[in-house]
Length: 328
Picture 1: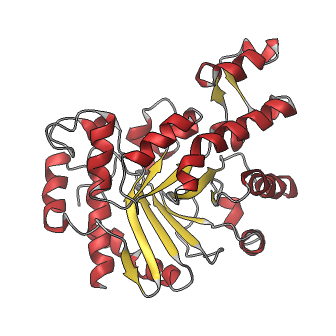
Picture 2 (picture 1 turned 60 degrees about the vertical axis):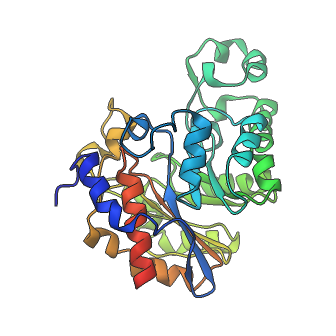
C-alpha cells in the first residue's frame, strides 16, 4: 500500500465510514472514544482537505470536528501554556459529551521551552541568565517558577475539568528520560501536582519496556493507577516502544498512533508534520483491534488517538478503526 497517497485518496477511503467515529464505540461496559491529535494543523485546514467551505476560523473548525468525533488531543499546550479563556472557549464550542485530552507543557516533562512563548509574568520573573536564553529547561528554574508553570497549566484547563470534559493530561517524556528512581519520582510528583486531574504517561525510550525494566515499569504505573500510553510507532530505534497491550489503570487506557514513517521518526530539522505523514493500511489498523478490545475489558474508557495528522490521514484512519471495532 502507498502510505502517502494524498488527501483525495484518503478522502475516498473515509467516505464509506464517514459516520463511524461520531459517537463512542461500546465494547462491553467500556466506551471507546476515537479521534485525532489535532484539528488545526495547516495541512488539515487547507481548503477541500477535511473542513467544509465556511469552516475557516478556529470556532467553526472545532465545532465541525466535534460533530464528527467524540475526543481530540490538544498538542498546542506542549508549546504554550493554556489560558483559562481558551479553556472556556473550547468548552462552549463542543457538545456536552465531548472530551479533550491535553498534552502537558514541555517544561512539565523535562523538555525545553521557548522563552518568548511563556506568559509575560513568568518571563519577567526569570533570573537574568535564563531570560537571556532562547530556550530553557524546567530543571533550571527556581522552585517558585516551577510551581508557577504547573499552576498556570492547571488554571488553563480547570474549565474543562470542572465541566467533565477533560479526559487526561498526557505527560510525554523525552528520549533522554531513562528508567530510574529519579524518573519514577518525577512521575509521582507530577501526579501529586495535578491532584484530581487525571494523567497518562507516554515514554519515548525503549528501555522502559526492555527485559530488565518492563515488569517494574508496569508495576509502578499500576501502583499509582497511572495509564500507560500504548503506542504504534516506527520500530528499531532508541525511542521505539513495542506495540504492547498494557492496562495500568481501571479508569482509562490510551492508544496513540504515530504512523510508521521510519526515515523521519528521529530525523532532525524537519517539520513536525512530516514525521507523522503516514496513512495506515486496513491491515495495520486491524492489528490493534484485538488489543483495543482486550484493553476495553479492563477499563471504563479507552481513548484512541491518531497522531498521523498530515492532511486528512488521521481523520480517515480514525473512522476506519472505529468501523472495524464496531464490526468486530
